[in-house]
Amino acid sequence: MLSTGDAQRVAELMRETAVAELLPRFRNLAEDDVREKRPGDVVTVADVASEQRLAVGLAKILPGVPVVGEEAVEKDPGLVDLIGRPGERCWVVDPLDGTSNFSKGRDVFAMIVCLIEDRETVGGWILDVPNDRMAMALKGQGVTLDDAPVRRQVIDRPPKGLIGFKVRKEFDRQLAPNQRRRLGSLNSLNCAGREYIEVLTGTYDFNLYRRTKPWDHAAGALMMREAGGAAIRFNGEPFRPEGPIDGGIISAASPETVAEARAVFEMVEVPLLSPQR
Image (cartoon, rainbow, N blue to C red; front, side):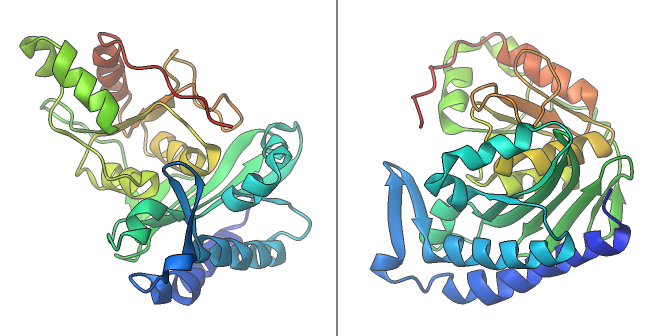
C-alpha cells in the first residue's frame, strides 16, 4: 500500500506537471499541436508532454512499477493488459482528461492518476486543473477533496446526473413524464475527471458512462466507494479497472442514488456503441 507521504508526492507531481505542461499550452496551441487519433478523438502535444513528465515522476515514487498511460497505450495496446495481471502493480494515467475541451479553449479539463494492485484500484487522484482542486483516495482510508473528507451524500430530491448526450437524448425521447421525473437535471461536461469532482462536491449526484476506459474511471470509482457510495457496471457487478470497455458504469457517493439511476436507465434502450480499436 502507498504511504500517506507518497500519496502526497503524487498530488504534488500532478500539480507540478499541470503548471509545466498543461497551463502554458492552454489556449496557446498551434494548428499542428493537435491531431486526431481517430475521427472525433484528438490528442495534443500537451497530452504527450504531460504523460512523459508524469511517468518520470511516478517512477521515482515507486521504482520499477510500470506506467499505463493513455497515449502510451495508443502506441502499444498490449500495455493495458498490465491492469489485469494478478499480484502485480501498475500506475494508470490520463495526462489530460477532456482533451477536446482543452483543444477548443474550454476550461474544463483534468488530470487523473491511479494505482492498481492485484487488479484492484488502491489509490486515485484527480486534479481539476483550471480550478486547482485535488481529489485523493486511498483504499480503506476515505476520500478527500482539497484535504477535506468527503462522506456519503443523502439527498431528498430526484438525483441530478452527468450523462453523455446520446443517452440523455434517449432518456428524453423514451421515458414517460412520470419516469423521467425520477431523475433531476442531466448534463455532460465532456471530462470524466471533472465530473467525478462535481459529484464529490454534491453539484451533481451521479454519473453514467457507456464506455469505460480505465484511465478515465478507475480513480473516480474508488472515490465514490470511499465516500460511502458505489460504482457498478450496467449488469450490477462492481466496477473493476480491468473489466470490458463497453461494460458501462454508474457511480455516486450514495448506493441508493446508484440504484435509482440504474432503475431508470434500464427503462431505456440506448444505441449500440460503435466499435473502437
